[in-house]
Length: 228
Image (cartoon, rainbow, N blue to C red):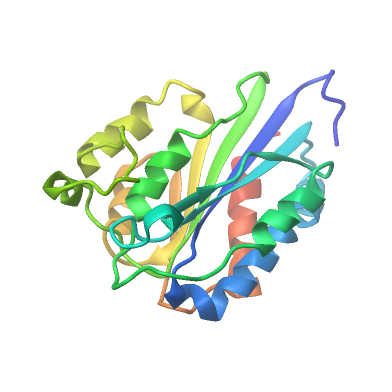
């Protein structure tokens, strides 16, 4: 990779993973795709003549905040790769598909937590990429107005409109943010893809559509978002 002292370009990638029981058929595929992502990223960047200074990867697991208690959200720190690949692999390998109750899940709260993550801010050039994978629609944020569970994000928006405003106004690297969504053609994912800037949505069906080919499609979308 390029010498960071010459032209720092930091890429942060946050894997936001639905780890409810309905994801059991594909969760191992998702985990292995996450673990094997870094070398594929370097190869893909090199093939297009692109170089970056540093890569950090984090994981945000979500389930259903209304029925999964303390396991509704689990978030790692960002791991710098390849230096912390082993720690990253241990975290990913420990992800278990459980809970979730009935569809939908807490995907919008997960998006909020992703936006508010500890993104890097010290590079001249940077890219902050959220990669979300789910087989379900998401609870409307308005549902929390009827009573917030004890572990509900305290400062979460109360509506999709407020979350949209956050995406557009987030002061930290507004131009750096990108989102790649692999989720059903359903609310709210289609709304995000239609109305939010710098997002792309690949529709999937429950328990399907997370093949190696689809992983390559997502990788290509990420690489294309990284400017030389």
